[in-house]
Length: 306
Image 1 (spheres, helix red, strand yellow):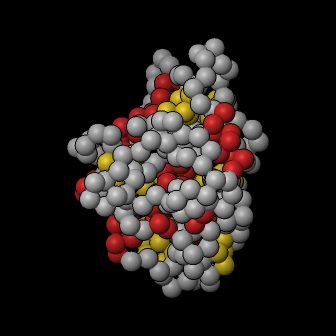
Image 2 (cartoon, rainbow, N blue to C red; image 1 turned 135 degrees about the vertical axis):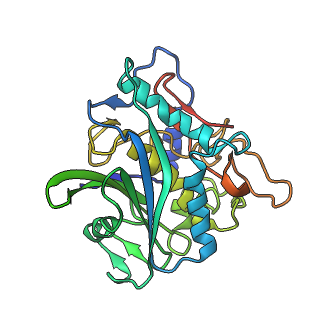
């Protein structure tokens, strides 16, 4: 069953972010490990594009996935940001920690709107089944003209798991993610700080690093969901609160993208001198992205790369 990740940029969540600023080392661990599996080994991230996306838009997301394992990008990089996520593996098994390696897998273009333009959670799971089942995370990305149950109301995306059969015999689970393009529906909810927020201080929006508010917002939410999927893929990994709406590795630090973040302010971010765009990591193919802070279980603080 999909676990709702409340990727909200509402003012009260930003206030929570401020309260998660650096704590003392004696603070209790926020995210509890529930003894279950984390994603391990070599994992393909398959992208399922539902609705109309341009080739340039697909490139933004595909390059982000490739950036996770790209050690050649300048610092701070997407790969160095992902190392915050890897700390959970040491905490889960200090004596023999596992690891995960994400790589870009297949891309499936489903632009014929086979389920229409208003999708249920069940249909999202069915779309996720179009990708590979074993050693994979299938990511469903819905276009700006597609509505999904709960989208822009209490979520910008979800992650969950689904059972599948391998060669008609062995039953296993695979993890999946859904993220929607909020550009025309709720950019202030799911693409802040690249759009003025629905709630809270109405500061001017930042310029999106890939010049696409909707897709840059999708990257932020996808990054958060990938962190949650790696550390809590089947609902019994690292999380706090109810299993159906948990705080996870990134959602425990909402609204924080750089040092000095506070409600309505994402933090001190680098600015591209040519485009004026704000970002915090470099990626493959010369890309720049904005990715969320990750809750660091070793320090009980929200860690950022800048």
